[in-house]
Length: 164
View 1 (spheres, one colour):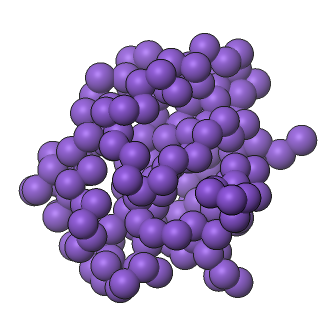
View 2 (cartoon, helix red, strand yellow):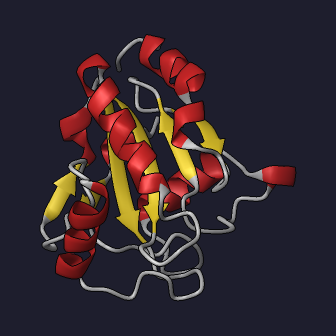
């Protein structure tokens, strides 16, 4: 059986970043953008990271430029923006595509495992969130409008799942 821990993504510097290093932790995977109406969610994501990291939650940001060209920056520009404007300290990884033929394999897996509204796999916009249990299995998908502060119950459930 495939789990999120089986994937290796790219770090912001282009090096491989195996998700196996997070084995036993719950993950909140988010496709992000710096010039989006939802960009202020970085603040809530950072709050979750700071408040729940000790409980076993890891927030992972994946910049994506597929929606309205709202993430045109380089990895350094994105990191600088996130740190300066929102104090982001959670991992912000390499820029990805989340839909189509160029979709990162992790997002292909997540969108098949957790469908969106009306059973659609396709991600509709920036700041779609996927919650993965400690066992590496996706347990929930949240729309871009879902505020990080409102995910507490789902995060509690994901953290309560046994590890793989």
